[in-house]
Amino acid sequence: MEFGICLLGFASLRERPDHKSEMVSQLLFGELFEILETRNGWHHVMMHLDSYQGWVAANQATILEFEEYQVLKACPPLFTGELIGLMEDKTRQGSFAVSAGCPVYFAERDSLSFAGRVFSYKGQLHQPPASPSADEATSLAMLFLNTPYLWGGRSVFGMDCSGFVQQVYRMTGIRLPRDASVQATLGETVHLIHEARPGDLLFFDNHEEEINHVGMLLNEGFIIHSHGKVRIDMVDHNGIYNRETKRYTHRLRLLKRLIKPSDQ
Picture 1 (cartoon, rainbow, N blue to C red):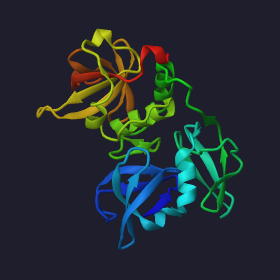
Picture 2 (cartoon, rainbow, N blue to C red):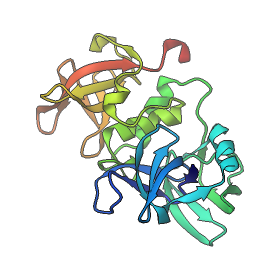
Picture 3 (cartoon, one colour):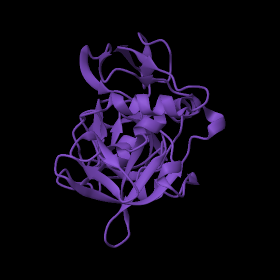
């Protein structure tokens, strides 16, 4: 078994080992993975964060020794806190942009060392609170406001609905699965929308009653979600109402609470 880390701003995770294949998710800077198979210049990987699997181009992955992988895996990460920050690669003398929410693991921002390379982060760092709070979740959600929608995306350069929620909750201190349908299996069910609180997750389904969308309640009557872009819309027991088009865009199926009252 081999192990790796992403040392680019992000790398596409594809359904098949082909650049023309659908992007199903992304690896962000600092994210760890196990390599399950290598074929024709591609690695089939499983992400440490959520066990999500996909194919990443081998030239966009950096191999880690098992010992370093274990150290990083056990280390509670800090996160890049700027909407878009600058990461300097001191070893190769270059810089690149990174999105908010990339794990950096260590507080010494001027000496981040991975796989024999040294990086320096030019920006604020974010440390998850000791106990997850709704205020923290809604504040972080607003950080990504107006980020464009991108299927499979998880960064400020583009994110889908479940990638948006996953990143916000991760920075709040709660790890979620990658897909909305799996996220919906977690937490405590809230039976009525007027009982929902800021930070609760709202799930929506299609005509086949398959959950295909997720967003977060900001406050009573309003949801933040990724649909075209990360945006704020009205929500009620029927679903999400778009004031611009004057119609409902998503049908409400389920409400879930993952941030408990004792956590606030």
